[in-house]
Image (tube, rainbow, N blue to C red; front, side):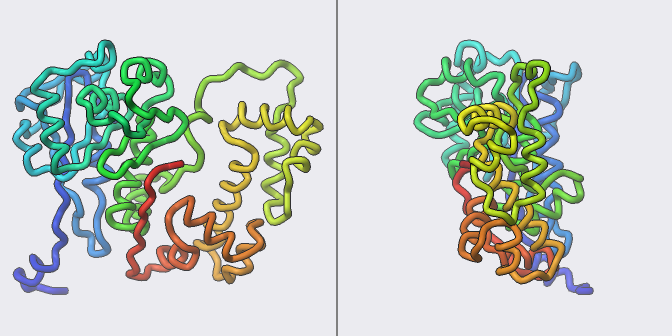
Length: 344
């Protein structure tokens, strides 16, 4: 162990400055997420990688959606040195009803955007949009509010189907659980998959969730006697290494290809082909993590056929190659970068 204070200081990573902006009627659950998932991110030596501060514009208390007030330790001056500004969801904000913000809030967000990336969780996207930070850019918000969002902010390229959108210096997420997905993505983008996986394990959450929020949208309950596609999905999971076609899946469900595709999308929010690719990626990741099976064999067992196909699908899903992904689960010091530009 090094006992030299000077050396310890020199080796300590420079912490990324994060400011979480608490607005009136902020969602209490989301207000604490950045402190948990960014503030809890550490390097291999256990040293913090982010400094997370919660602030209100005037330094005073704000009421949360949970029926109690919070009094952060910081005011709007913290935004001056922020490298990332996080806006949790809000309820009852004018940004959600008439598309307006207090002038001082708009000014603060725009000024901060000149030197910091902007991140919103759930309905926090309404605040970024009202400040003009999402005009002409892709973004998402909770599916329940997507129609209202689209009506208020037609200049935003809203995608209501994804869990989050990374547009470089502006990132938005869907519902509050998707905020966890987005914050883990931020850690992964900044410091690699190993660091993100570490904080995910400590928090007992999945380091990566497949699919989009369309799978959670409320849909009519199937009619009595409607068998659906669940049995076929179970059947397919036992045969991922086989060349399953859409016709094979439809035949197993005793449906036409058209009916099967429509029903499958209703039940999962995904096309059969995209769902199948995600399940094969998930199997490949499991084999890479837990076994020493050669990558060539994993490509076959997971249904990709060739190493090149596996590499292409894995990189599209999580931004890393098979051997690099395997190294993150072997305790090596390799740092894996993820340059994913969006969830699509």
